[in-house]
Structure formats: C-alpha cells, structure tokens
Image 1 (spheres, rainbow, N blue to C red):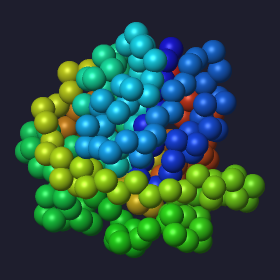
Image 2: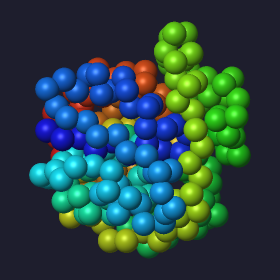
Image 3: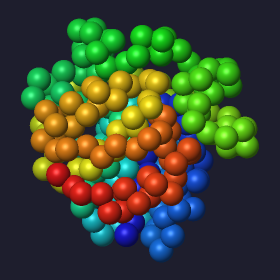
Image 4: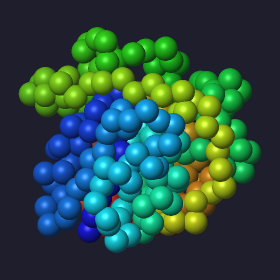
Length: 219
C-alpha cells in the first residue's frame, strides 16, 4: 500500500520517521505543508507525491482540517485520523468557530495557548510524555510550527465519502480523547480505535500504530 503522511501543527514531516520504519513492505510519502504558499494544500500535496493509485492518507492533529480535501485530491482509498481534529461537517463550522463556541470541549485547558515548538520542556509535557529519553531527544529535532490561517478559518465541507479510520490516543494531553471519540461517532459514523499513547503515537508507539492503520477497520 501507499501511505501519504500529513504532519500536524507542531512537527515537520521528519516526525513520521519511526512510523515509516514500521510500515515495512509498504511505500510511505511524507509531505511538507510548509513547502508552498498555501492555501491550496491539496494541490501542494499532489505536487509532492508521485502518481499513486488509491493511497491511504494519514493525517495528524490539526491536519485533520485538510484531510478530506487532500484525500479527495489524491483519490484516496481510506482516510486515517491520528490524534486529529475531525471537522464539524454537519454544522459547516471552521475550527476557529468551534473553538470560540467552547475551546475546552476540544482541548485540555492546560494546552490552550501553548507553543511546544519553542520549548522542549513543553513538548515533553504535552507531546512526548510517553516516550523514553532517547526518543524524546530525537523528537525535539522534529519540532516545527505550522500555523497556517487556513487551518483555523477553513469551513467544514460535507462529510467525506471516502472510508475512514480514527485512531484516538487515550493519553492525549492536547485534544481531549473523549471529544475525538465522540467526533468519530457523531461526525464520521464510526467507532474509533484506541491506542495507549499521548498525542504523537507515531513517535511513541509506531509499531502499534502501524498495525492499526494497516489493519484497522474502516468506517
């Protein structure tokens, strides 16, 4: 299988390296959302990957805003949401509008306003708390802010017709695991898969995450 890997708001594409090593026998294509002017991120991703036949598109964290459009642009066979924001398809709200209506419904209060890319100690507290010391030291080198306005202001479109798999990190300290699980059920109509990990299971639990995204049941 071909896996297109879309980074979130606090890491660059190199953050996927542990997961890529576990996806043996498959082809991985990490993309860089900062390698362009935006806001046409689906076109940007299309330019960065070769011609693929029905890839699986995996998005982390805030890249969930863009996942349906990227999946559509690539003719994806499946969308995988990893610790990811799932848009309000029925309401059509942007992430900014949803946050304005109740930020602590989505996010842990302690996380709001934190930029872990500026302070490794904050990254360890919120992103890499479930990693060993060696992994944390490596992960610090992947930290990078991706704060495109499009992530906040893009209105949610219709629910994707492409099948999805949602992986909820049950020890996430950024997005609330309960919110992600409810969003999977209410917005995508599927039962999420849990993983005993913090916000970045592709760093802390790559082997387990690889098994879930390869064999996880789509909805």
